[in-house]
Image (cartoon, rainbow, N blue to C red):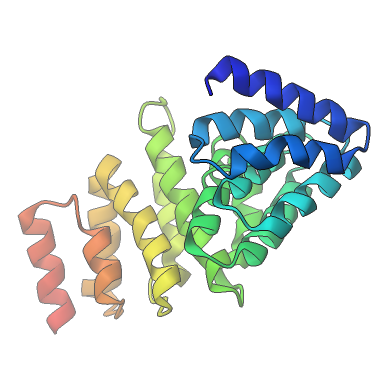
Length: 245
């Protein structure tokens, strides 16, 4: 399947969804989800599906989620992403519900990179407010997604003028999660810190020094290792000394 074929199929599925023929729409999509279809093509189909009326789209998303295919989470995430400009709060709530439903690391990562991640780029302050409660959510996958969203922001913002100042805001935002102990969540938060450190090493080095050396906080070893991946040898040595005191 190529991009043109994906767009054509996405349009056919979207028309059926808009006509409330969820059964036929899913029958068209199911073979694609049963194959190793590239995510970039599934994204295109998800965006097409998500352009329809919310109530009709929601029925299709529920059908896709019930089958629990990896590619299905991509289509779901792409569809939810279409709501960011018209219903940010609703998009976040729906995203969270599917993160919980997926109950697996790749579900959290797929949704995080397609809903709250892009939302941070386009609606930074409002998205940060909506992500705030996720930091202490009872579900570890929801907490993991916070880090995934930050990773996406850092990866995409590195070439956008004027966004570097927001890296500091994200570091402050992640402070409550620095001592996260559940490993699945640690990996997501650490991923976010790692990508911030790659593109904004100065602010991350200072922030880590504040957490570890001056405040004597005790993160998981994996959290600290990921966060310091792109720091200089001297910066890492300083953190190591602080964590041993």
